[in-house]
Length: 147
Image 1 (spheres, one colour):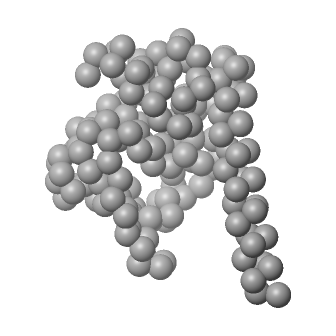
Image 2: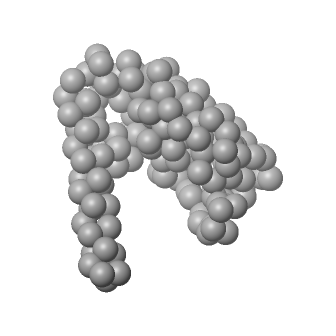
């Protein structure tokens, strides 16, 4: 995929949607692209998550051993959003269903981008703040049901 195509692709991913074009360009240039075969394990539950993966093509099965839940991730999905900014472990195992291409964005790269591009950092903060607000509301609704 050409650099401009990668930048356009990243700009459609919710976490990166509000990023400055130069920030997206730096991400695309510095990230590692990996080609994966069907059946290959991208990561295992409990392993340290040192960044995230944007699925560029193909499909990946995500499975949690804790609750048995499964879902299918595909092109445009970002796996490991939280691990882009904090140390964490993978909460699930990701196994490639079809051959796939992913862009690996390390935490150190993401933090460098956020430091160098303040407007992108604000956009990223806003995405996470909205999600946290929704989660808080959902938890309050559950609490009300349980009382």
